[in-house]
Structure formats: C-alpha cells, structure tokens
Image (cartoon, rainbow, N blue to C red; front, side, top):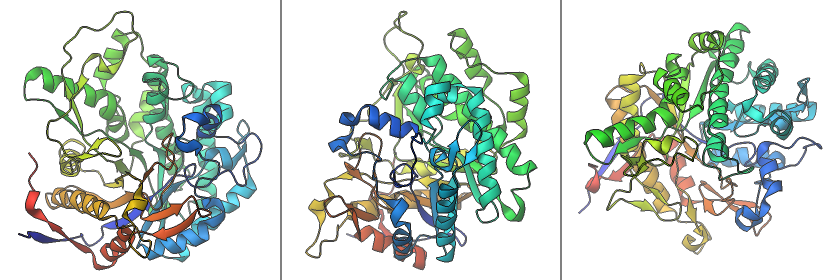
Amino acid sequence: MSNKKVYELPKDFFVGAAVSAWQTEGWSGKKDGQDSYMDLWYKSTPELWHDGYGPTIATDFYNRYKEDVQLMKKVGLQSFRTSIDWSRFIINYETVEVNEEAAQYYDNLIDELIANGIEPMICLEHYELPAQLFLNHGGWGSKHVVELYVKYAEEVFKRYSHKVKKWFTFNEPIVVQTRIFLDSIRYPFKQDTQTAMQWNYNKILATAKVINVFKEGGYNKDGGKIGVILNPDVCYPRSSAKHDVEAADKFDLFFNRIFLDPSIKGEVPAELISILKEHNCCFEYTEEELEIIKNNTIDVLGVNIYAPTRVKARNEAWNPNVPFHPSYFFDKHELQGRKMNPFRGWEIYPKVMYDFAIRMKEEYGNIEWFIAENGMGVENEYKYKNQEGVIQDDYRIEFISDHLRWLLKGIEEGSNCTGYMLWAFTDNVSPQNAFKNRYGLVEINLEDNRNRKIKKSGEWYKKLSEERKFEFDDFNFEYK
C-alpha cells in the first residue's frame, strides 16, 4: 500500500551542491612549493589511498569548470559551494603575494557561475592549509599562521566580495586535527591532545579575526554575509539514564559546542577550558583574544550532517599512561536494528535533520543556517546502470527525500533553515577513500578520461529545483 505524500519547499529555500577545491581541481596550474596539507599527505602515503587515487588530477575541474557549470545547470543547482585553495591562490605564504594566474582562474569560475544563474558560495579553507606552513610553523598550531590566513582572506575579499555574497571561513574546522593529533589516523600520525586543542582554538580565533576584517573592511556591503561550515555530530545517548546522558553531553561539548558556541554565542565553553586545564592539555589563549571572539560572531551557519552519533557511559577505568582524550567520558554505541549504509558504514537516521533544526531554534537564537552537506556514498555504482548506461541511484533519491522531509518538518516548526546542499555535485576524490564511495549527481568515469554522465538522481534533483516539490512514501515516517 502506497502512502506517498507531496512535500513542498519553502518559497526562498535554495537547493544546491558542494565540493572543495582540493577534491576537484587537481594539480594543474600549481607551481613548485604550492602543495596543500592534503597534497603533502597524499605524497607521503599514496599507498594508503584507495587504488592509489589522490588529488593529482581529481576531477580535473581546474581545466573543465566551464563544462561542469553547464552540468550544474542541467541538474538544477541554484547554488554551488566550493573553496579557494589557499595553497594555490598565494604564491609566497609569508608575504601573502597573490598568484595572479590562480586569481584569474577563480575570477573566471565565479563569473561563469553567475552568468549561468548559479550563486557562488565560497569557503576560504577546506583542508587546503599550505604544506609549507604545516612543515615550517606547525600549521594551525601557530598563531603566526592565523595572521597569515587573515591576510590571505583579505586578499580574497578584495578581489571577489563585489561578486560573491556568501563567505565561509572554514569547512569542518574540527576534522583535520582530530584525525591527525587526537586519533592519529592520518599523516603525520602523532597523538598529541594539546596540539589538537590548540588547532581547534586557533581556528576559532581565525574565524573571528576574518569576520572582523570582512565587516571593518566593508566587504559585507550589498548584503554580503560571512559564516563557518561545521559538521556537528547529532548525538544521542544509549538510554535516558543519567550516566548515558552525561556521556552524550560531554561528547557534545568536545565535538559540537567547541565550535558552535564561539561561532554563534561568542563564547568558548568554560566547562571545556576547565576540563582541558584539569588534564594538562588546554590551548594557549589570552583575554584579548577571547574578546575578539566575543565581538565577531557569524552571520550564517553551514551545517554538514550525514549520520547520527550514539554514545554510552564508559564501563572501564581510563589508562593513566595514555594522554587525555575526550573518550575519557564516553564510548560509542551501536543501536540494534539500525538502518545502515553498508558501503560507508554509517547509520541512516534522517531525523537528525529535525533534531538539529530544533536545537538551532531553541539553543542558538534561531540564527540563519542551511545544510551545507548531506549525501550518500555508494561503492561500485556501475552495477546500477541501465541499458543506456545511466546509474539508477534510487537509493540516493530516497536518502535525499527522507532527509529533506525531516528538515522541512523543522522549518515548519520555526527553525530558520534557508537551504539544502548535496554532497556532492560530481563524484570526487575523498580523503584516503579516493573514488571508492561515490556521492555525486554526476558520474565521473575514471576509465574514460574522467568523462561525466548525469545519474538518475541528477534528473530528479533538477525536477526538485524547478517544481519545488517531491513525493515520498511515508510508510516508515516516524523514527523513535
């Protein structure tokens, strides 16, 4: 029995898609010494990347952006989010001299998007920290690097702020240091909790300083807005028991509030600072810096949500010989009977959209926000091609629809969410997984000179964009 229901998008709600520079552009046009951290990681351990694929060619977007912009039109994108590769845009990282060839490329890309009716949304750092700054100064552990980043950001604003109205300081600022220094699963594989926390704090400070430059420099005129793109883990306790709820609260503090609170409320959580001091791994900060953070909060928040996180209280004692880690307070929990994406290993729980929407409304002043990434990675998609060679990714259409309807429920209840962006526009290389799991509305064929072909989901997305509505079978609507 069918229970199909029609859902309509709000009047000014935009639909788009996102990528990053390092995952799409490739190394064309880069000069010697212009590696990013991601390039450095790949060059250091290419054997750890699936089938050896890395950012070398990626999707060749640098050379094929005009072709790709036409494909964006064909799949109905109203907005397109990408990043400017700091390591490409600047040729001398200490003097902040601009690479004019790179600047022209980004100028041309922005113009091409606007000419085709697609709003450009630009992120200033999506893991593209210049490798030289990582090797010479310790990357985001250095406040000198913070100052160089602020100067880089101003050079970008000078050139493009008259054309680009939505800016973001970072994409997922918590991720790189969590993988490198907290969990030690990425190059250079060094576990150092204090360094991870210093990176977190310095990115919070960098965001505030760039916001100050954006507003004091008048780059926000004509409706320009600036924010940050975070990847909050919508976290659920195993049970309603006090110990499980407290475990979830601590996870939320270390992985969500650590960036949400300073970005929106202008405050680094006092509880976080207290715990880090207790465990001798607090970041270095000054009262003057905290004042800068307090006075320079974001205009708009981008949110990347893919899957829920579930935690429970720890059962065993912490090893005193191991440096402090946030998991001191919790263990991960796997819900029995959960729906899974077997390829990515992530739980599928679309109600995360609604729960986060209500949190934004009730805890964060109902600031303007949007979904900056959401999507479903699937391996071996060629298995789902029809006779015409088009990937029949009905699973992706169902995934988007299911998440969108929960998001719309949150909007109906007053949450100030203004749009939805899919990850990703095309298939693209991902950290270490490379092209293993595909996310795109458009297929990238690695065996055929990286040629492109629109998937079934791409045609569906265009219809969604144009008709402003979609159908979904509500048989399993209510998630507990």
